[in-house]
Image (cartoon, rainbow, N blue to C red):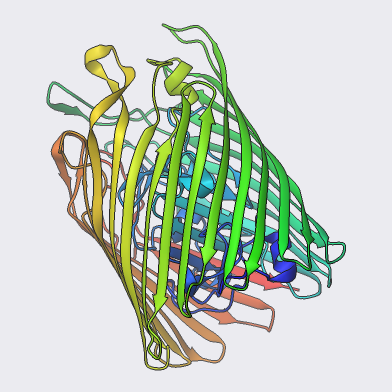
Length: 623
């Protein structure tokens, strides 16, 4: 069964997504081991929770600049952006906004404590150096605490590394004055491994405002490092570091007033500056011949973001400190018990404004959790868990989860499902911040489940998946105009329901195909549709190798039936990307890639531009 006695793999279980293998199509789930469903190495095909993966090989096939470029190709994930690259866009998982998604980077929680709601600014996450991405869907507060109502997104830069030392160079230039490049170092011995990356990106951009003419540029420098080392069969250590320094220009917001839409307009001076620094370190202690595994870790995350050229100018400073313990005990080969405890402190400093003084606020969150993984009979894997959380300002909350995976003996048919509750603690901004705070807020709560089937055909070369999902969120925290824009819990339920269907097909050694369709029906507490969540999304991918040194990859995405503020219907659109690469030497690849090759004129946020056709040329070399 799970057993989880994976030896040295456990040393990196919190900071790496292990076992990546080559793939061709974007949706091919070739990784055999995933981390997020049980916070420990688990066979992907035995997880009852639906988890999507993107491997290093898939990212190298596409060579896209941002992490969100890969996320939006996965079923159930939608991205909207008020302008081009670098804009503060939004991400939803199964229709639930990003404030309901826990985001980890090599195990570091990178949610911004200074945001109106604690959430991640995904536009600052470059793809350079990433080894793998996992997206765990469903209510996951039992294992991950607050903010994991819709799921967890985990980025890893530390994967399988061959013994020795290797270097990676990557460079690209193209449309809109775009230049990016990176350097990576990989090193490994029998006892340890390390990955270090530095990546840079800049672009002149486009005008964020659809009616504007001034370009809004973007610059980003990111450094990350991760490593683990095993001293002996009992003790191992791990650590990771992340630094992001980014600057993005933006335009004035559009808004609705009295039923009239006032479109966005050029702002020649508006900028967002973000500096993020995070780190995590810990030790694993495995005893009783590896049956009893213990992990102790600490982490810190600091963010300073500055807004310039608007009426909300100022410096917003946030900090997070967290200590964690996680243990696992193999009772038998079919029963593993897990448990843990964590304690988190958040602090945020908000600048003084026209109507408010400077604010410095903090709170603490502590939690304990238990989880059991059981294989009662062959091919049936069950998990059940519970968490108790205590918040320094609103008290306690209890969450639970359960999942099941069953492979019908003698067939390639697998059924899976999960059920769980979740919660989102009010943010520091909602409780004490400069705009309508309310210290009496209570957590938002959720109940969700999903049911799926997976079928393999043609000697496992073709895999089809179908999943139904259902998520209800209660006690919504909103800023109410009728009460002077004070945050408050409101009655009613926000609903998120739909279907995800996907397939991967390795036609032969030269051709691989993938595809996904997502239908999402979302409604707020009032019964109105949630904005910027497409009802229909279709994604297709293909990878073709016409000759030994040539590879052609392409992707297409169709988005239909999306509404924005004021029940405004956005146009449907089709995006087509492609890349042609040539393996000049055993270690060097040259490529040309194109984005939005149909030159679609579309919007994902009303009144804001999106990039037109773009062409880029680059190289990637390993030595």
